[in-house]
Structures are given as structure tokens and as C-alpha cells.
Image (tube, rainbow, N blue to C red; front, side, top):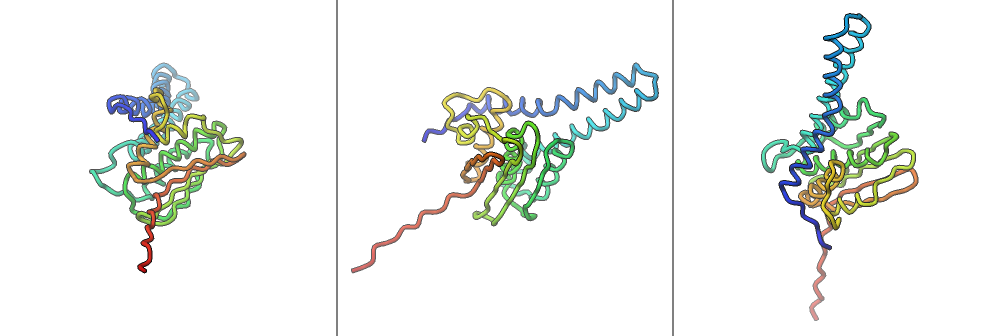
Length: 224
């Protein structure tokens, strides 16, 4: 299997575009609210503007905190992260969304790439449910035996056909959109964490599992 390698400059540029894509909407709403405050004298409209600014600022902050952990360095090389921190930023992101988050993972100190993988899988699960639904995160095991399962449950959850190829890094053309780069990046993180991704789709449930490859056992022939 040939694994596609994207140029590092293009990867950085597309990831920056992805983050900007997530942040621009609430930031734009804050600007609109400030303009209303400058122009309006009506108390009701000013109250509406203040509420818009508050909610949009909270949304922008939640998205930035999520992106910092999902895409950022999140500490020095080789750093580990508590899964409780991942749960906190994930709940902050989905707090005002149509999607319910069910987090079934113990508080563990895990290598940062495995924690980043959990968060990125949550984003991919969300993309499979444009009308909302339930995202469930299950983490079992520990250390090299850890297993991650993220499922999307809702009306007809579906990934675009090329997303599994992006996850595997085997797409025969370079990803060129903020949406595609996130799936490609998730595959990079999985491989950096020495984990294999498996996608399974059913009528109302889409599941992505990540686990370490099992070591092959070599059996020596018995001495005669």
C-alpha cells in the first residue's frame, strides 16, 4: 500500500485554513454585535447585541481551545495529556451544537498524539452527521494496549467516500480543502501514535476504531 505524503508547507497552510474556517464565524458575529452597539440606541436591540457578543465569544473561545489541543503542539515533544482535558474541550465545543457528546473514557495520562487522535476522530464523526446526533467516545485499555472507539449515531450518518482513503493516506491526489485536510491530518496522527484506524458504517451508526497492531507471534519449531 502506497501512503501519500503531502508537502509540509501545504499541510501547514491547509491546517491553518481549517482553524480559520472554524473561528471566522463566531468572530464575525462578535464584530456584527459591536457594530449594532455603536449604531443602536434601542435598549432591546443593544441587549440582543450584547447577548450575541457573549455567546459568540464563548463559542470562539471553545473552538480555539479545542483546536489548540487537536491541532497544536500541546506541550513539548513527547508530552503526555490527561484525557480529562480532552473531555473538557470536547464538551466545550459541542455545548451549543445539535450534537450530544457521550464521553466514556477514564481519566488517563496518555501520549499527546493519542489524545489528539480522539479529538480529531470526534470532528470526523461530527462531519458524518450534518443534522446532529450522538457522538460516543469509548477508551479502553492503557499504554500500548489502549483502544479508542468513536461512533456517530443519528439519522443516516455517512462519510464521504474519499474520507477513509484520506485517513489511510492512500488518496491518489492531494487534499485541497480545509475539510479534507483534517481527515488527512487525523491519519498522520494515527500513524504517529502507531495506531491503525478501522471505519465501519451501518444504517444509523458509524464507528471509527483505533488500536495498536498486534505483534506477530513467531513459533519456533520443536527440537527433534
